Every structure is written in C-alpha cells, then in structure tokens.
Figure (spheres, rainbow, N blue to C red):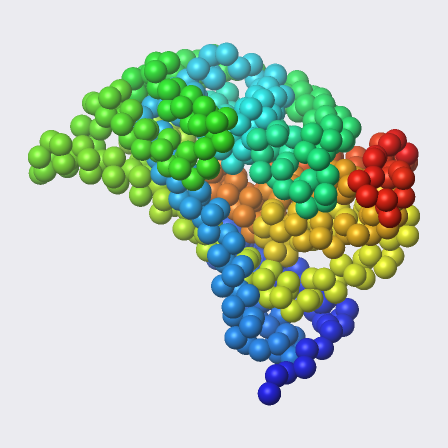
Length: 491
C-alpha cells in the first residue's frame, strides 16, 4: 500500500531551517573558526534528521529519502575529485618551488599600499582568462596569501580580495560553467547574458577595488625591507628559485583556457609538479628521501607521499615553515566530510518539498519587479545555504522563477543575471557550501573570517536589488510572451 504524500506546511518547512540556524550559530559560538572541523557537520546531520521525521509524517518513505540523500552526495562527487586533485597539486607545487617562486617574485614587485587592490585585479584577470575561481584560488591565490604574510599584511583581507577577483572572473567569463549554466536554465543567449551582467558586475568590482585600495593606503603598512630580504633569502636557501618553476602553472592555465575538464587539468598539474620537483629541486627531494631504499624508489616515495600527504618543510624559520607546508589529498578529507553532510541535509529538504514550500511563501509576497528580483536573490542565497551547492543555487531558483518572469513580461536575461548575482557569487561565503569549504581548504582562511572582506561578493547582490527597484537595466519582453521567440528591449 502506497503512502499518500501530504503537501508540507510552511511550519514544516521552517522547523528544520530554524533548528539548523540555531545549531550552526551555537557551533560558531562554541568552536569559532574550528566549527567547520566537525561541529557544523553534526549540526547538518541533526537538521537532516529533523527533515526526515517531517518527511515521514508527510508520507515519504525512508527508502525514498535515503535514495535522495545518496543522489545528492553523488552530485558533489565531481567537486570532491577536484578537491583531491587540488590537494595533490598544492603539495607538489610547494615541493617543486612553483608556489615559493610566486611568493618570491611577488615580494619583489608588490607594494603593500596597493597589494589588496592588485590582488583583486590579478585574480579577476586570471579567473576571467580561464573561467575558474577554484583554479585561480588554488594557484595564484595560494601564492598571494604567502606574499601577504611576507609583507606583514592581513591574510584574511587578502583572502577576501582573492575571492572577490576570482568570482568576478568566474561570473563573467564565457569559459565559466556557471556563466553557461545560468542562461541555459533561464532560456537566455550566452553573450546577451554576459552583456546584461556587466551592468551590475563591473560597477561592483570597481567599488570593491576602491575599498581594497583604501584599506591598503590606510593600513599604514610599509614594506619591512629587512623582513622581505630575510624571507627572500630563506626562500632561496631552501629552493632553487627561477622562472622555470612557473612552467607547471603556465601549463595548467593553457589547459584551462583550452577547456580541458577541471579534474584532469588539475591532476596533470599536480603530476607535472612532481616531475618539476625532481628536475629543479633535487637537493630538497634527496634530503627528504628514505635512504634505506634504492635511490629511484626513494625519490618516487617522496613524490608519492607529497601527492597524498602534502609537503612539510623544516627550515628553522617557523614563519616560513607554516607558510610553505600544506597540500595533499588527505588534507581535503574534512572538506569532503563537510560537503557530504551539507548535501545530505539539502537533498532531504528538496526531495520532501520543504525547500519549495519555503520559496512559494516568498514568491507570494513578490508583487513588483523589484520584489521579484529580490526574492530570486534571496532564494539563491538560501539555496546556497541549505543545499550547499552552487549549481543547485542556480538551477533550482531558475526552474522555480522562470515562468513567473515570463508571465510578468521580463526578458530571460533578467533571470539569468539575477541567478548569478544571487547564486554564483554568494556560494563561497557559506562555510559548508562546496565553494566555501573549498576556499577554506585551499586558502586556509575560514569563510567566517573573509566574508567581511569579500566586497565584490557582498556588493553585487545589493547593487542588483537597487537596480531592480529603480528599474535600471530591466529588460522587457516584446511582443508579449504568447508570441514565439520574443525580443528583449530596454524597459
């Protein structure tokens, strides 16, 4: 006998959300920046358990919900593979001298007063060129965190600048998957979508750069010449520094521009880093090798261990050791745990209709164009929080609001832009979201810290809402939506 499925009430939808918010707030209060290393995962599982109980009450079977959880986890496995590859890449690029070389040259050319603004601009250019915020953060971003430490600047503000620049490129590059996904969901054309996004995206970046410049000039930070000379000398003492160290990064960026899929691109970059370590850091690799093994096997073991466990340097300089130790696939396991826990929670909410019921309540209050776009952005942010997945934060609200935008005579580019304004760029601000967890794992700075300095990601949704209420660059459909292939004109 099949259970009759009951439509969830608004109270049903709110209970797991409120419980999760309370538990996550308590987790942060009790554990601070360590909340992502276990406490948040427990909060997500408890929230999922409550959602399951509500689902059982409404007629869903455990088997159905378990299947939904497994499916939700499966959706994150692509990100998990990239995470493991990035862990391996960071390890071998540290050993190969690629990251140390980037830090060394950055210390020579970057001025503290302009550093935060330059970091944002540099990451924006790289990300726009390759279409990937993740690759940008894992390569140039890791090095810039190191440069900030060397210059005596804040790694937290630097992380905010990296996130701002990286997500500008991720949002607007035609090579980016989210830039292609949003118009596909909304029914818009790719380059129309990109042109329409520039009206909110470029002003947001400009404002962010101005703020970063002001922070740099007002910080009073002055390059400590003696400290830079010492750190540069220590880098040269531990590694063979040269431009050839940067070849693995160049190869990776070329592959990304050629649209080679992310996982093989990053993993090939990691393997190339291992080869480069053997070629350009032979003294360091030999020093780390197990002398009880034949030479070739000893060297192989060093590279192999770096891929799975990361790189640890013991130079006698505690600051340098902290700066240049890290990476390895194993170091990403906590991030994977967090992502899977979040996907379990989000999958139950989606399958049992609790998330849709919550969105319907919001949509019922959205009477004007301004309130509709605001509701869409709020839904994207909520989806990023509740389902922990950037793609879900684009696809789910896109499906939910597409017909409503058409019914109100709004061109599809309005929806596609809003999905990016609310979904793409808020994902790294949520600690348990795949993007937030990834950035934490790569930059070693918690989203709870850099959220206050990811100015582009904070300004863009606000600017989009202001545009919506003021009617700025809101395109209307004409002729009416009943006519096939409507043409968008300025409203």
